[in-house]
Amino acid sequence: MFEKLLRIINLKTYYFSRKNVIKAVDNVSLDIFRGEIVGLVGESGSGKSTLGLSIVKLLPPPGKIVGGEIILDGENILKKTDRELRKIRGRKIGMIFQDPLTCLDPLRRIGDQIIETITVHLKIDKEHAREMAIKSLERVGIPPDRIDDYPHQLSGGMRQRAMIAMATVLNPDLLIADEPTTALDVIVQSRIMDLLEDLRNERNISILLITHDIALVIERSNRVVVMYAGKICEVRGAERIAVEPLHPYTKLLIQSIPDIEKTEIELKPIPGSPPDMRNPPQGCRFWPRCPHAMEKCKIEEPQLLSLGEGAVACHLYGG
Image 1 (cartoon, rainbow, N blue to C red):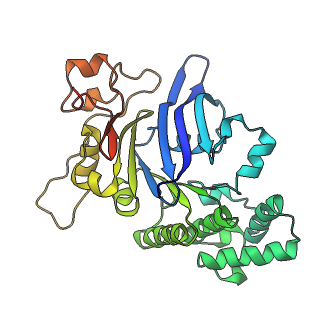
Image 2 (cartoon, rainbow, N blue to C red):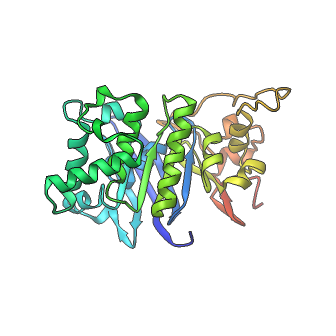
Image 3 (cartoon, one colour):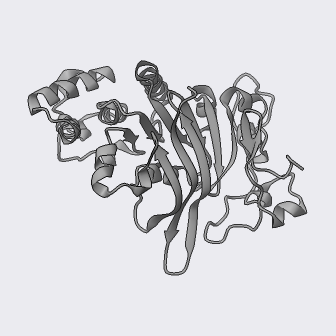
């Protein structure tokens, strides 16, 4: 787990309109090691999904990467041509999108969509590709006789499994899972996460798990990355961040998790709302909601400071 698979260096991804520039990902740096699960967590609008889409360069307009580097296995993805990127997507990087019903082609059978993924990258005939598709579906718990079903004939959990089968059929090095358990009941959520962990263990795949559920990433990830308003505010091991969160935002996120074993503890919602990214606050972007805000926080932006096994961007640390 000490070999770096992906390096994101000072990444800047902005959305441009006639009047405003929204800095959705603003100078973000992050390493992902081979064979680890990294949980990327934060409220809606924090830039999590934009970061995931930036890695595979599938940003919707008017989004644009304006700076930084994304290095996969020593190669800068941002310098690749569209043709070169098509060889990387699916082959080296798999992507599980938020809503499989809208991401799967409703007019094509599940099997045909997986077969196309295979034949685009491998020079094999369709019969062999169909066998690979069946094995991929079986691996995620879908019976072979469902290969000719259309997406609407599958349940929400099965559609998500089909999406995972498509994303992992070519054994990618990195799997980006963007809200893979959203809109699923808790039992199906657990099965999907078990499946992702099994794939990681069997194939040494690195997984970037993007979600708003900090309890999920603490339970299932090796490391947790907390984003707020386009910036990383804390990076720590999952076990450490659960018992000793450093950033005030991380602490508030954890305090908002209900605990059925501690019913006497009152839940504490995070006060206020996320900032308007068209005009974010000066200094630390969290200071208007922070219980520890100082005058310095309103003026000077905190830098990500390495602390032992993790890092935190807060003026409460490092003087």
